Each structure stands twice: as structure tokens, then as C-alpha cells.
Length: 142
Image (cartoon, helix red, strand yellow):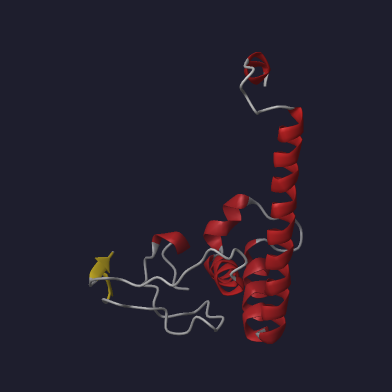
């Protein structure tokens, strides 16, 4: 800030800083609230998924303490559901369909040419496309 004040050509000033911080704050609020709304809706529509998430939360965290970041590694199904809600809700309108242009193997899992997600309009935290040992989920299947 001090450097910007000394530079007469700088557009960085207190007013611009306030505007940028306000934009970031409101952008974060909208995406968070929209994600939570999708999660609530999808949990209502899929009570079996809700029960499995609750069971995993109860087993890992229990009732006596608050969750910690380290708990994520021991909660692969819950994390898969969180990622699936974010994928399904598609709250940032920048997502475009992706497909492979050639056969490729990732950690022993073949992704065929022109492979598209088969059911992008369904909540699927147990999708069989994720191979065992997928590093994102700590070795567990979604």
C-alpha cells in the first residue's frame, strides 16, 4: 500500500482495495450458500447417502469434539460426497464438458478416448469410474 501511494500512476488505493475485498467477500458468500443449498437438497433426495455420511462423521469425529482438518483423510465417503455436490451443483458457470482426445492411463486406470462422465445429471459418490488407490481419497473408492 505504501509503495502504491508513492507511485502516481498506480490505480491501487484504499477505495479500490475496499471494492476488491467486498467483491471477494460477497463472491465467497454466494458460492458457499449455494453449495450448502445444493448439499441440503441432495441429502434430502438421497437419504441413503445422508445416512452413510452421518455414520462416517459419527465414527470418525463422534459427538464430543469439533471436526479438524486432519479428519478429512479418515472420511473418504464424506469427502467424495462434498466433491460430488460441488460437481453436481456446478455453482461456478465456467465448467465446460471435458473429454479425452486419446486413450490415456492414470495410475493403472484406463480413460478411453472421448470418455465422458456417463451420468453427470446424477449424484454419484459411489461412481465406479474412480479406481481403488485414487490419491485424492486416501486409497478408498468413492
